[in-house]
Amino acid sequence: MKALVKTFAAAALIAVSTFAMAAEGPGAKSTKANVNLSTADFALEHYVAVTTEGESAGVEQLFAEDFNQKIQATNAQTHGREAIVKLLKKQKGEKLNCTVSTDIIEESADYMVAKVVLKFENFTKTDLVTLERVGNDWKVSKSINSYK
Image 1 (cartoon, helix red, strand yellow):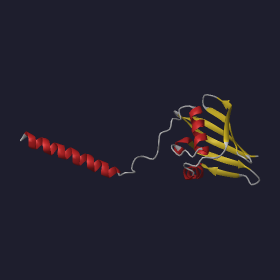
Image 2: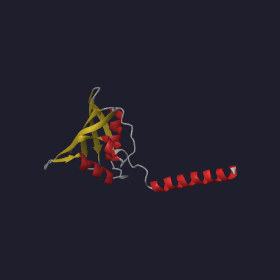
Image 3: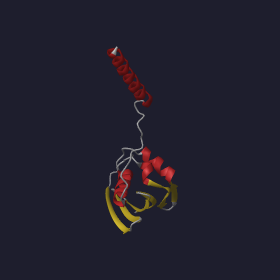
Image 4: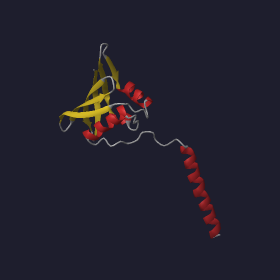
């Protein structure tokens, strides 16, 4: 009788775990990766990785809800958070052929302004990035781009 109970218990455990795995499916794991944005430096480093190296993990997490990007050119453009997140997700895995340098212009306990310079073969892109502390994380709240 004990052997029969043990057999049924084992079969029940196998069935439950099999159904649980089947319900998740092969690609059901969360696509939102938690990225460490606990410091302004980590957030800036992740921003550079997202914009230049095709990193896609934590893109939604990186940008503040009211994020906007301005591109200073002959026809100035403004883009919101949703458009930038969508664009960066499309560029997953694409690395830009440029050298990157960052310089922190201003920093306090709750915000940082950094200059990110991308030097390409024929032009240079300068990105002034504002980061803000939002709760326990740092978020990119503004980006102003210019080209030379």
